[in-house]
Picture 1: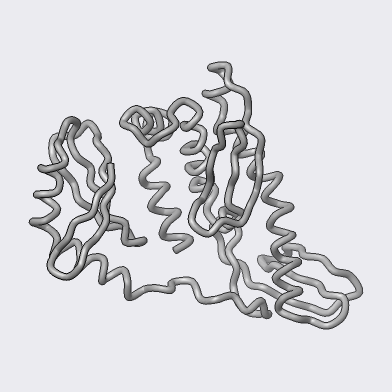
Picture 2: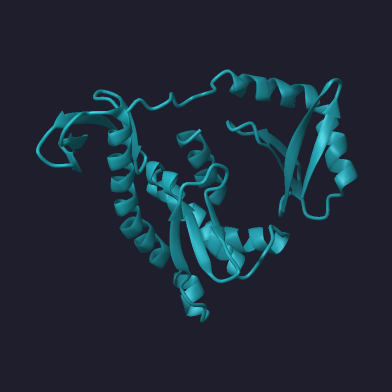
Amino acid sequence: MTGIIHFGNTSFAYDVFHVSRKTMEIAVHPNKQVVVKAPLGTLRDEIESRLKKRARWVLHQIDFFQQFEPRTPARRFVSGETHLYLGRQYRLKVVRSNTNQVKMTRGRIVVEIDGEILPERVSEYLEDWYRTRARQYFQACLEKCAQDFIRKGYGLPNLQIKKMLTRWGSLSRNATLTLNLSLMHAPPECIEYVITHELCHIKYDDHSLGFYRYLERLMPDWEKRKRKLELALA
C-alpha cells in the first residue's frame, strides 16, 4: 500500500508493509523512501494519522539524506578513479596497448586500449566487460535462488540483462527475468535479493501481503539486503 502525506507546503510519499508485529514502525531509508511496517489489519486512516504526527521528523530525515546526493560522483573513466564490482571498490587503470581488452589483476580493473585513449572508448569496453561477466554471474545466482520454485515444478525464467534507470529487475508474463546491468556493482547478497524478489512474482503478480510473506519465508533478511543495496548504489 502506498500514499502521500501533505504537511504544510510540502509532501512525501510512503510505502506500507503489513507484517506480523504488535507496533507500528516508521523509517526513512537513505534513498529517502518512507517505509511503514504496520501490524496486520491496520487501517490506512490509522497509518496516515501516525505519519502526520511524525511528519516533521520524517521531513527532517529526508533533508538529512538529501545532503549526501549525489553520493556517487560522475564517472570520468580515467586512471585512478574507483569502480564497483560485486560490492568492492577497484582502482581503474587505463593503458595504451596493441589490444583492446579489460582484465582484473592485482586488485585493479585494467583497460587496455589500442590507439587513442578516450573516455568514451574506456566506458564502452568497461561496459562490455561488465555485461560479459554479468551473464555468467546472474545465471549462476538465478539457478541458486530458484531452487524452491524448481522443486514446485516451475521452469527457470529466461535471463535478460539491460541498463535500466529506475528498476533493479522485472519479471514479464512470458517468464523473462530482466536484471539491471548496474547490479554487477552491488554485493552478491543484494543481487540474490533482487532475483528472489522477482522470482516471487511467479506466484504473486503484485506486492500483496502474500507476496511479502512468501519473500520473507524464502529470505528472512530481505529487508537488510534491500537497505544494503540502496546504500551501496545510491
